[in-house]
Image (cartoon, rainbow, N blue to C red; front, side):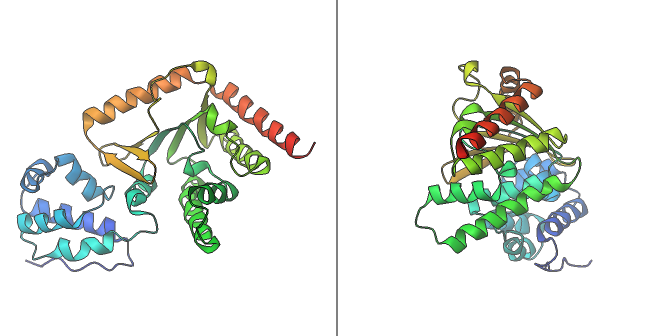
Length: 279
């Protein structure tokens, strides 16, 4: 029987690694749940590895090699599959975004990455660390814009964002930057490419006051939820947790302004910023 070959790092290594995992598991006659028990993870986690929505970490790769008797294949190749342009805490999320069929996101303090403009990204990163070299910031801008290109597809993923009014009124980068950013968001929404709702201050207390959240759904893998903090974050695939956070998002949608009123507020604020910039 042919042994698995090492992966070529230039050719979608994570997808190839997941496909090889599925092929080897099925060849051994194991279900995802059975393999998961052998390596101390859930069956859904194995499914996400096979679909390429989760990153295979070295410790798990070695356990898979032992369980599947693959002579170190996964241990050797997980490093190639882990290469990313993004920070370690966010790399897995960015890669999952590209595979998602639907993304639902709430952000309390800033415009979410997929809706940001280059100038907004520059202002954010300069605020995060005023000592960062300019060339590093430009690399981050390029990376952020590369992420946003997934919206070039006319329909996929479905992106549904609830923006806190605070994110719209927090003047990030100056009035001209905010004008451009809010017009960009309104343009995407007017074209039907994204669904945007604003959670107004008048909504009072709401279901996500403790922080931001992002829910992602996939064709052939279980859904994920991402929690983000200051320079940190984690993905969660526990079905009960995902279901609970989906309910939180549904409550946010119920508290937010309808789409047309949300767009009217975004465009009104964009005009206010523009007028204040050029009195």
